[in-house]
Length: 453
Image (tube, rainbow, N blue to C red; front, side, top):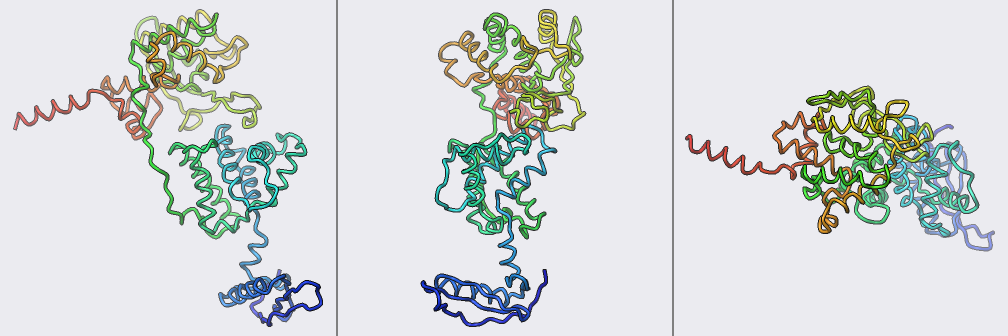
């Protein structure tokens, strides 16, 4: 491709030879004649005006196509669909299964809004399916497309906006609106929005890296969602008596199903473990003395994800600890009561060949359906009013109860954060409303100080 700044423009000429009126824009680049025909005079005048403006701005013109630098870049620009697909392909090997799923979720939402208004738009549910199964998954994982999927894919490829159009604020705002909402149209949580916005920012940075954009257009947009409170609702927090009643109620669910899960739920309450951390807990990670406190060494997690996103093709895949390097560990002291529960569990149910404590009859890990056991246990342990309340509505609320208990017991925040696998800042921000009795303690200290002066 050769470039030239020697450009000359001629007047627009009407093409009298055609049946319908048409208008020809003519110009030369380095002596080579170029032309473009339009069906209306206004279109021709606008095009000639753009050419003149480009020359006035000092842009070079391509001698082969006759187009200025800006128009040539727009003509050759990849679409948002192509950019998003390239981004997913480049980053897939480096992402955890959950991150792959979250990234795809963001790309699907944004791709659906960054399209031109073309006829024949397929149903949104069909477009979502095609994007998830036939666009953003690696080729070897994609199913063979049927006629409906092929038609939808063709529409997406034709309607997807060029990346260069993202320099317009309206398109970037449309993308931000998309990531601020859940699939059902409700407002997404602030943490969800921030995660999706971060993904969108990374994709646009990738466009800058590929020289599709000169700068990240997201940096110019002043857009903030309505602030939400990330603090844990204190109404979900159970007291020790209620927690023990729930753990007992779990054992009455099913023949042995609930009994096999009871110690897993106990780990969430007495050790504040995340569900994925209980799945990865092995016997060798447990120090369980006959008397006194023991401890758990949390090394691995087994998060649940779709088979589409795991390298092994299994629902569960071992990962390192959340927010930590792959080989980091976390030591969690456990009280004698928890030690006894785990000792009894191991004695009754044993472990898998690889040492895992919590497993199904077939040796697999518990899926998210363990929540159905929890729901039935709440109905046994609670009064009707409590069942309909937010109290311990999810198994994860046991972890909230554990952290709240430690803070209210006066354990220093850095120690609590270390045991729970949090940073101190996130810990205090999340559990600020669950720390009871601090006002009265503060008042007494102030009163004492005032009396001494």
